[in-house]
Amino acid sequence: MARQARVLVMANQKGGVAKTTSTLSLAAALHEKGQRVLVVDLDPQSNLSMSQGIDVESLQDGMYDVLVKALPISDIIQVREIDIAPAGIELAGAELALSSMIGRERVLQRALEPVRSRYDYIIMDTPPSLGLLTINAFVAGQGVIVPVQCEYLSLRGLAQLTQTLGQVREHLNPEVEIFGILPTMYDGRTMHCREAVDVLIESFGDVVFRTRVGKTVRFAEAPVQGKSILAYDGTGQAARWYRQLGREVLERDGAWNDDLDRVRRPVRDVRPQSGPNLRLAS
Image 1: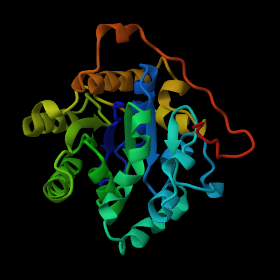
Image 2: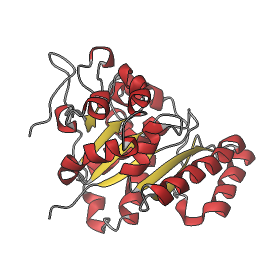
Image 3: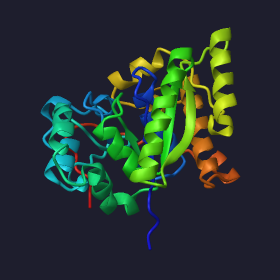
């Protein structure tokens, strides 16, 4: 039986915590180490899709069609720097459309099944809410990565997320768990930021990643070019942060070895040609 992809969910109901940036950057770091990676855009804001140069306004088929119209996900996957299942603005109507369906929490799980053998990792970007799209991601996923801004108010939201995840684990998917907590917007010069990380470690222990993602204007510049931070500024500090995160993910999955230190697969440079829908070859 072919190896099935490890399915990770990037989730936090609070916006502005570098969730989309972390989804794409982690995917790029894993791809660089030879992993086959698919990212899935489940956020109606479509920032992940736009970060790969996709024109979401003219997108013909996206995750809305997969979830609501049962279009095979392989029909919408586009070959970009990272393989991506994009979303357009119509995804905003998906939760309402799904709400009347039987088995609505498992729609995404069923949709991903046919492509799991093609990839080593599937990483999903979720909206800043704990609604039906995020619940679908939790049901389909195995591990949840929670980017957390290093401030007190952000830490409080973790309690609600862990409670929701506990309910999903009890009723829908006993396998899903918090895979890691990623401190973002980190500024080690401030006592408040350092104390926030200390609280995280006291509460969650080794679940907190060693990686600390700081602030840089590069994170705002990269999406404008339709690139991950690793493709846009591969020798910069931000790229090093996410390479470290990629290593931690592989270590936690038992997939890291010292030989990978020397592996750096070139960035895949696939540019839009006649339109945004570059289909994945079967």
